[in-house]
Amino acid sequence: MALADTFSDLKALTPKQRSAVLASYLGWTLDAFDFFLLVFVLKDIAQEFSTDIKTVSIAIVLTLAARPVGALLFGLAADRYGRRPTLMVDIICYSVIEFASGFAPTLTALLVLRTLYGVAMGGEWGVGASLTMETIPPKTRGIISGILQAGYPSGYLLASLVYGLLFTTIGWRGMFMVGALPALLVLYIRSTVDESPAFKARVARASTQGIWSTIRNNIGLFIFSILLMTAFNFFSHGTQDIYPTFLEVQHKFSPHVVGAIAVTYNIGAIVGGIFFGALSETYGRRRMIVIAALLALPVIPLWAYSSTPLMLALGAFLIQFFVQGAWGIVPAHLNELSPEEVRGTFPGFTYQLGNLLASGNAALQTGLAQHYNNDYAFALAVVAGVVAIVVAALAGFGLEARGVRFAGAAPHPAD
Image (cartoon, rainbow, N blue to C red; front, side, top):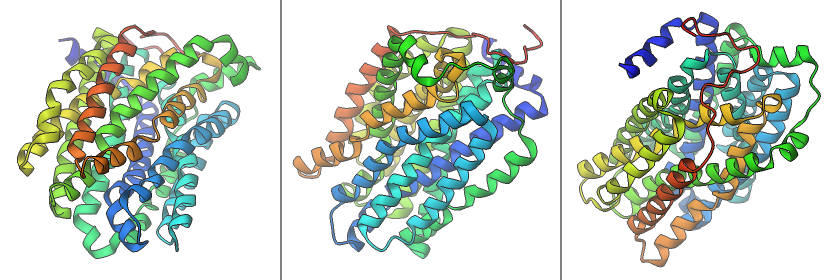
């Protein structure tokens, strides 16, 4: 009954609120789409530039490591100039850099471009999430948090489809060029999305507190958020980034089979994020994160050690249902924990600093696999098992501010 009520709350959203949700969802979807195009073509890029997969995987490391820079720069801009214009600039930046990646003449040039892409990618999540969470009624945060975070596996799903359907025709360079399409989203944002009511209210109060003074005043919260996001990023990237490579190298599956399995597990991720996000509105953010993380543990053997495409697809569907189920709670959880004055910066900055600390995951897993005679299953299982426990522990003993009201936010009719 509570879950049905949560879904029914969505009907009360105004057209402008729905537009903000859709714009932020699509922004994260298309950002993730651009990011995950790379994970499908690591082997092919390595072949073109006469190197190995581990070397090319440095591109993933650099992208993830650069994201805190973007989160800080675009977050500060969002807190000063507004969420809406900052989000538009950010989307244009990552689209242009993605397109340019398709023309990289050398591996070094590609690595530079992927670093710049990381800066742009780092800005999108925090700005888009704050715009949405500050616009919608408090009672809808859980379900919409799941919808927003579902943008990440939705982007992975799109990348899977492009890889499975187009790769043999357009190659890895053509896939990056397709990644320029998100720039069109800016037209939608410009015509349909309003500025965050909370940002307008803060500007009206002429607040002057900045990110650094806020960090000093909330150092415990800041450190906790970084640790939590580090564990979360190991959880997602440790179960996603090298899984296509695992299927290609260890199981020798064709691009079409790899693409089909990736589509399957991203559907699981989308459903899981929305499901657990919605439940968190009734049963609490921390509790549902703990449950989702721990439920991933018994699925690991099926996900990493099955031998047939069908069983691997089933295991991948289930693992991502729980991994992204936990992640579906994060947009609401971090925005509710964040200080009012810097909500455009704080969630995204702490999230991406966690990404920085977890940015070596792909190199760690590929190096571990190579050390054990290309045993990618072992590398995947070890990381997933350890971080599932860490995520559950940090969330379970951490903080929660479910339902806190934001300045300028419209109340829900039932409140």
